[in-house]
Image 1 (cartoon, rainbow, N blue to C red):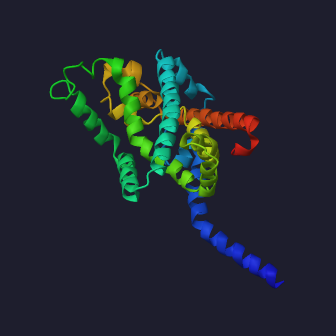
Image 2: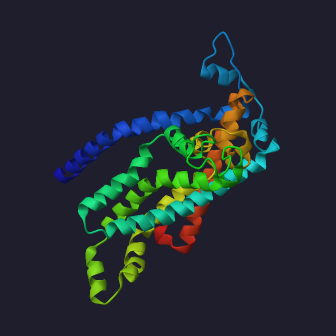
Image 3: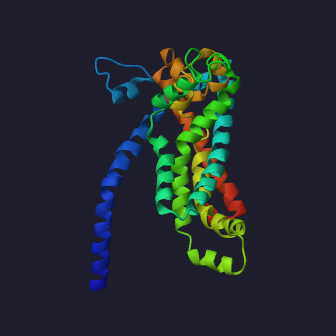
Length: 302
């Protein structure tokens, strides 16, 4: 009985610790999901009591009409193609470069230099895309930019896939690198010592010890990234190109298209876009996890 009572007290303490987070998750994540119904309505204010609940109750149900505009536009293929292509490239390059940098940092023997490099790489993550856009403009400005003589950058779309990819890597690489570095730090150093005694080179140690030990972390981050493959960072694609019209063929993604179309879209349409993006993300997560579970069941998230 005493053991049972002690276990109940421990469970109660843990439950109380989790309660604030659970309440936050409930009210800020799950309760708003009720607004999904707006995606299937001709949502309009209904006076004299135009509250959200009253508007939802009295708005007319129109089925999937709000979803049609996503594909009805003449440029639908363009922003869908750009969104998927950019995110696919971001996932691959960020994963490869972040792992490479994390391994390089883990091999540094000087603690001060390791901390310095970590700070320098992590710092861009906290910089706003608005600030980054002016950094880029300082290089590419047609009048005073460092590279102004090369091309009229904000009128010619040819170089922007590389510019946007480079900006994304510069800003996000440090965050992902720190995650992988933390995973590498947790690897048992006895494995490296045993491998060194057996004559394994540093390259062989990386492939045979480091990569296999951080594989679960790589898979988790990969699956999470795939889940957002239909979402675009609007700060990157809207602010950095300065919303320049001639660049739309290579900078237009679903989020920037919706932002520009807000003057003509209804709340039901914007909700439909958000719901569509989340459904695609959910399907991608389930698909990626299914593939991982098929190839290596122990590495699957669920």
